[in-house]
Each structure stands twice: as structure tokens, then as C-alpha cells.
Length: 418
Ligand SMILES: *Cc1c(COP(=O)(O)O)cnc(C)c1O
Ligand SMILES: [Zn+2]
Image 1 (spheres, rainbow, N blue to C red):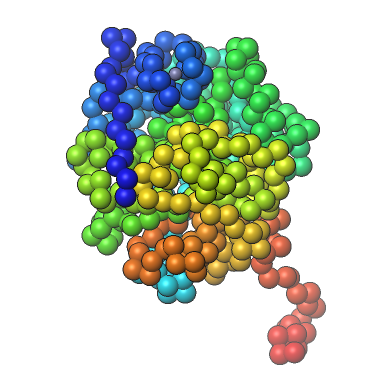
Image 2: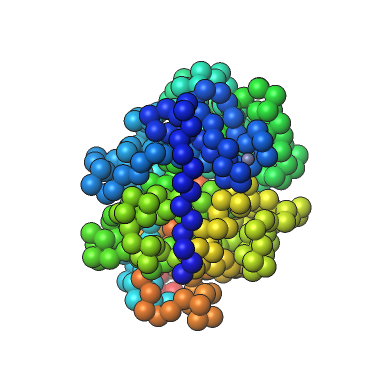
């Protein structure tokens, strides 16, 4: 495994409580909360949150995302009930795949049904701190549902831009009921992000897509929870974490959590889990970049997959996530829509109900195991990112068909017997 890069730029004089922003490309520092800023003013690079000190596990206390406040830029957030999701053991699936041990971290059990809540509890709190009036995001669905709920909680106006006809029904319903203004764009997710980023640059709204560095801080807590719970359950950390990749925000966030724990001396670099990304074959620019050993991702203009949550042609956080794959000795793989549906069914047969994008993690693990990239003695965690009910149409299509019967016992018995 390669060394983990630990950035060590000194805090600028105007850091707040040992917290500042820095450009991942040129290390230029910025005060964290003085102005709305999404990119480096010098080189347009992505920004990340940096800290003068990193906590060890002993500093964590309580439940959910805010258990990890010592590793976050604020002491508290706009709260619903984010984080604290279950880590299910999946022994039958582990046997079937031929791995030593398999757990499923089910992020679909966050309040709005996806991990996006973890980022929003931090991001919307920063927005309210900055005193902005209107929140906005482009979304394949779940970001809009989470932003609408957290925006409502904070009493703020919310604008969401969705690719018309390409968002699962459950997600649009959530954004609608939580009171977001929903703009249906005649284009794909990447077009929506281009438009909303321009609106944000014009000062029309505060951007809460995952290029917002504060969101990824909240999402780091997925890694903390997996490590703590896996250690409690099995006595060790997992060898590998497999996750779906859309904008690669989660991949970047997990990698950042590992680097910070290593910097704190709380995690042995040799114990850092291997980060393994999975995309749908019809939408796999990140996989192409990993296969080419490239530092950047080439945008795919045409993308298509049943896994609409990861139907993304230009992963916004690729520059943050690619080093995470490389330095942890990981890889990335593309899987077919049929393999995704099979994996969604397999998870459901273990009682774990997920949306298609989430099932990509298991489909990717199966393919890598078949190819011998994943060893039989590995202890693996699959991250499932969203709930089954997010996409009722996909679930119904993948599941059993209703059987019409008459409204009498004899008729039902005859049907069951026949
Ligand atoms: C947002 C989302 C993803 C993609 O996560 P990234 O951090 O953008 O890679 C995957 N699955 C679901 C269900 C999502 O909502
Ligand atoms: Zn820069």
C-alpha cells in the first residue's frame, strides 16, 4: 500500500479555532467562515477543510454525526437524526461471494433515506452561519431530498435543479413535500451542476453540492462509524470498503477521515481499509481514470444507467478521490445494470432494502472477487447509500409479481395449490 499523503500546511493567522480552508492543488489557505467560497481564488482548485489538531477515537462521544464533533468544523449543526446507521453482518452473502467476512453499512436508514443527510447537517449549518438567504443544489435526487429537509429545518429557502425524467419518484416527492422549488432541467445531472454553479457564482444561492467542502466533513463520519463498529463487532478494522461512485464525494470523504485518523496517531497506516469504487458501466468515467492511472477524469457527455443516483459523467470530486483509491491500494470497477439489479435482489433476500445505486457496491465486490482482485480471506464492508423506497419502480420491477386471486379462501387455496 502506498503512503497516505498528510497535508501539513500551517494554519493561517485568520483560521477560526484551528479550522481553515485550503486549496488541494496549491495549498493556498483561506479563513473558513468569512465569505462564500467554493474554489481556490488562485488556481480554481477544490477546497478542503483543514484542522490544526486531529482527535483520536477517545474524543468521540454521543450518537450519530455529532458524536464526531471534535473532527468537524462546527460544534453543532442543523439537526434531524443523521448518522448512527446500522452495520449489518451478511454471513450468507459472505459465503456465497467467498469472502471471510461481509458487513453492509446501510446509509439508507438516515432520516431522508440516504447518506446525504450527514453532509447537510454540517453544510446547512455553515450556510446559516454565513447568513445566506437561499440554498441550492443540482441533484440526481437524494441531495435534493436531503437539502429540502435540512433547509426546511433551518427555515431557509431551497432551490433544486433536477434532470427532467431521470430522478426516482421517492426523491422528487421528498423535495416537493419539504417545500423546495424544483427546477426540472432539460439536460443531465452534469448540465444541472453547470447551471447551479453559475447561479452560485453570481451570488444567487449558496451551493450545497459535494464540491462544498463542508458537506464532505459530515460524510467523513461514515468512516468513523464503520471503523468503530467493525472493531467492536470483530476486534479488527475491515480490509476493504466497497462503495458506489457518482461525484466521488464519499470516496474523498472516507479517504480524508483515514488521513486524519492516521495524522492523529489513532490509526495505523497499515490498517487503513482499501477503498474500492464501483460505477455503472453506462456511466463510468471514474473507473476509466483509475484504469488509466490518470490524475483527472475525462467527462462523459452521454451517461445512462438504472442506478440514477450515480448517473454522472463528470465526477466533481475526482481530484480529491483518485489519490484515495491509489494510496489505499484500491481500485474501481464498472458493473452492468443487470448485475446491479441482481445485487439489489440479493441484498433484499438478506432483509436489506436498497436502491439500485447502492447495490452497485455488492455487484462490484462480486465481480472483483470473481476476478481474484479481492481475496477470499478479506473482511469487507459494502456501503449501501440509499433506501429501497427511494426508487419504488426499480424495486417493483426487480421483485416478485403480484398474483391476482379471488376474495375467498377456497379460491386462494386453489391458487396456492395450483
Ligand atoms: C449521492 C449518491 C451516490 C453517489 O455518491 P458520491 O459521493 O457522489 O460518489 C451514490 N448512491 C446514492 C444512493 C446517492 O444518493
Ligand atoms: Zn489553488
